[in-house]
Length: 170
Figure 1 (cartoon, one colour):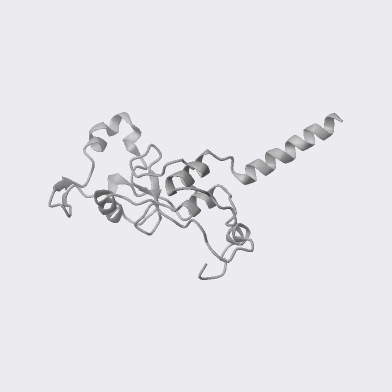
Figure 2: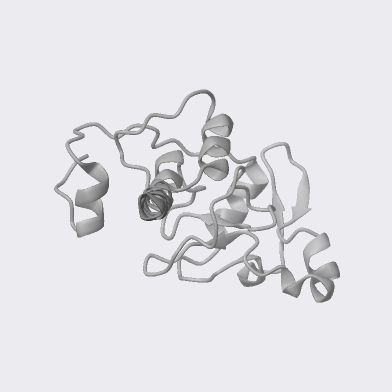
């Protein structure tokens, strides 16, 4: 881990683990990485904070930094709020999804202060999975497992209430 837990949540989620598994981030293509690097490192920053300019890719191709479709369809789509968005250290994940990507409908998938998509483990923690929980398959499959899962704390709460209801009928 590198250092001791700094919060109650971190202590609870780590439990007795000494190794951090699945701290893996999806790769981005070159253009999306450049976009990510240009998104300000502040809460709520998204594509609307990108400068209107062209960038030169390693292939020599020159392209718009802002995807054409975003400003041209923004009025019909709530300004595409959150696309290419950074998460907030003090906030919550807007939702856990099966495929975090910058142009996804949720969109807010960039780490608050690093130029990358949030990792499998960060998404798992957002759902309450302890660090001891291991996911299987590719990064994509792991994200799908997390996004489709019932969060463990919710499953525990539901289980307790169901048990109470069953016990009350006895």
